[in-house]
Each structure stands twice: as structure tokens, then as C-alpha cells.
Length: 216
Length: 210
Image (cartoon, rainbow over all chains, first blue to last red; front, top):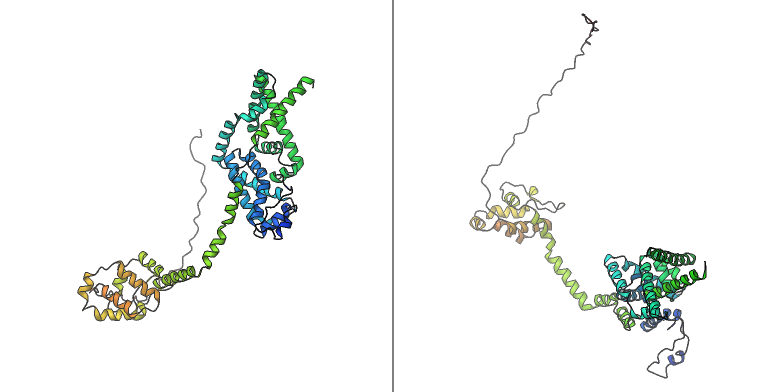
């Protein structure tokens, strides 16, 4: 469900209650935050449902591990609930939440064991059949499909070899889940810097691939 | 840049997009929301306050504090680090002045028994000498002495217990040091200034020069 989309609240047990009239209202994130602050866990549950994918994918971009991303997402939501009073509304709730999630994910990424697991998972993930199929399907002939598969593996290797700043910006931008403003809030950098990092990451990957082809 | 290069770059860009999207593709588990809500609803601060506000728990805590204050286990700690034998030996010394038998509360280390205990000790030392000899003269008596000394105003029972457990006094004469007489001051004569020694300059050496 997209953030900010109209939500139909579940019907209360008593159909004659006043809440029935409210069930067709558009409920914004700000409304849900206000209700969650008053101790309504269901309102916060609705916020979790709205932003769970965005939080999870940000954590996945940082950690590279689905298990770690799940833990980080859970910790981020719990932390956000406990810090709801510090949310002033200067940015959207999603941006504020993503900033918390990104910090949690970076803290996890900094440990050596998580790093090791991340690389192992990334290497294993190179053979994901769905992703391979999407690339292979672009080639009209089996030869071109093999070439496309090789290219995809090479690109993933080059992405993994990027510096964390460039890689984070590239993955977050290409995930299609976040605006540049949200990425800037997460990474703590201006939008122009984020755009430059994405462009630089692309240029480096192209350059290294061309160098590798010339060597081959 | 010709058309072939442009086509090549397009292919690489598409591969980058696909690879990056694949690295961030995924959905959290279906139970994520339930787990988050479960963690939120069992916030530790709430049950801690509820636990602390329970009258039964308050009564138990007050009882524990009262018992702890009454037993004062922390008063026994200095006795474990203080050598016990000198304390007992000094307590049994016969000609001890009452003011010298007080403890040193500032340091918390018992030095001597109180005056009452010493007096009773003097009266009972003949009758209980055999019992005192059989009793261990170690840590129990030292800890009792430590408790009576640190309490400031020891009770009668504490002193009698110490007196019972104390060893008999030594029959050694006290060492009396005679007072030192003031000796004559040492006069130091003024130093006599000496005449400077005049050294004559050396003459040219005689003999052949090389």
C-alpha cells in the first residue's frame, strides 16, 4: 500500500458507534501519528503496514542480508514508536522513519560479522533465478542470453566493489522506492550530492567493465 | 560516440538498473507488523512501574531493608581485613586506661575494647581463663569486637561475649622507657677563613725543544 493512500479503517464491533462515520475518512500519516502518541497501538500498526516495504528495502540496501534487514526493520519501528514524541513534523513521517531505519542499518553493518555474512549472501544471491530470468529474457538468442547473464554478474561484482557512499546512493536510487529528498535525508547529504554519487557510481561501473572487457 | 557505443552503454545501464533493483528487492515477512506491535505493547517501563507500585512488593522491600539495617552485614567487613590477634592481646592487657580503650570510629577499625568490657574482662579473667583458652582466639572474637567498636555505644552483652572469648592476658612486664634528658647543645665554631694559596706561574721547561 502506498504511503498516504486513503485507508478504510476496520469496522468497530459496535456498528452504531460514532467510529463508523470516521471509517471512510482519509487518514494521513500525521493523523495516525497523533493517535499513536495517545497510546493507540493499532494506529501505529497501520503506519507499520504503510512503510514496512520502504524500511525493509532501505535496510536491505545497507546490510545486503534479508535476515538482517528484517531485524533492522523491526528495531527501527520499535525505536520510532518510542521516539514519536520527538517527531516534530518538519519532514514527512516516512522520511523521519527512514532516517531512523538507515541509522539502525548502518550500525548493524559496522560489525565485522555482519559484513562477512553480507558478502556471503551477496555472492549467493548472484544466482537468483528471478533476476537472472529478467535479464536473460531480453536476449532473443541463447548466445545473447548467456552474454546478458555474464554482464549481470559482472555488474553486481562492480556494485559490490564500490565505496559504501556510492553504493548506498546507487542502490537506494535504483530501488525505485525513495525520492532523492528521502535518500538525502537518510544519507545526510544534499540532493545534488546524492545525484552526483549515483552518476559517479554508474560511470565507475561502466569504466571498470570496459577495462575488464579490454583485458579479456 | 557512434551508435554502437551508445547501444553498448544502454545495455550496461540497463544491467546496472536491474542489478541494483535486484539487490534491494524483497518484502518483509508477513509477521513483521505483529512482531513490532508485540514488542511495543510489552514495553518494559510499564511493568516495572506496576511492579514497583504493588503494595505487597513495597512491603517486601521495606522488610528487606529493615532486616539488612538490623543485621548490618557491612559492619563485619573491616574485621576481615583487620588483624585480630593484636586487638585481642591489647584488650587483655591489665593496666589499660579507659580513654585509651576506645575505638577509632573515624577509621572504622576497632583498636581496643571499650572501657566497660575491659573492666569486666579484668574481673572475669581468672574464672574464665580455662574456657578462654579452649575457645578460638581468631575471627569470631575479632568480629564481635569490631561490631562493638563500630557501633559507638556497645551493649553489655557484646562486652561479655568478647570477654569470654578473649585469651588470658600475658604476664609480661610493661616496657617503660625512661625520659630522655635534654643534652647540651652542640656548639659549632665559626669557620676560620683561610688565606688563598698563591700559585706561581710555571716557568718555561728547560732542555731541548723538539
